[in-house]
Figure 1 (spheres, rainbow, N blue to C red):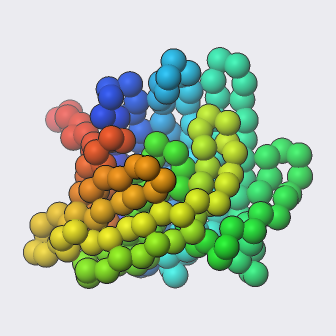
Figure 2: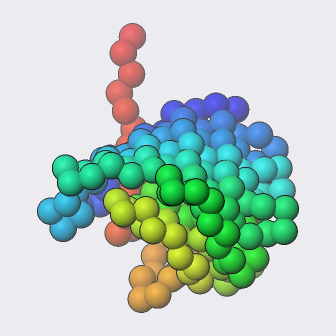
Amino acid sequence: MATMLTWQSDDGVGLESARVLLNGGGFRAVGRMIRDVDGCVFTASYRLAVGDDGAVQRLVVDAASAEREKSLTINRSADGDWLVDDGSGNTRLSVGGALDVDLAFSPVFNTIPIRRLDLHREESQHTIPVAFVSLPDLTVELAEQTYRTVSAGAGGAPAVVGFSAGGFAAEITVDDDGLVLDYPGIARRAELATRA
């Protein structure tokens, strides 16, 4: 199932749109965002591939601000490390067995562990390592994030999943596919009008 989704940032100075293709336990997403963070306006585009096992296989990100353009490619190696290429060649980054990547400001990337861990359907809690990619500078670092089911979805009703990392916490509302509807402090899915 392929769908186009759009989110507007809670502060009103950002927009993200992505084409998401769900396929079994995995999915692919191609998206673009524009944000103003503390007076720094930037745009970023990404291509994400998540395998049938729910683990990230590859992420390509391009980011641009008035000051610079940067690109980043991340591939997960067979031994569980990440190969990171920022244009100066591959660097091996050990991220403690992380299966997930989180791109700053994007609700698409919270869908990865929510779907992989089935948090939108079954109650559980997990603290996981992730490769966190900051924007617009595209630095990659190991982060620890906690996800817990607040309420599982049933009969098409949305699920709520608690998220915390560092000093930030939010309760994320997701649809039956685990795709973010509302991520307080980050973004809310927008319903775009269609033309007849």
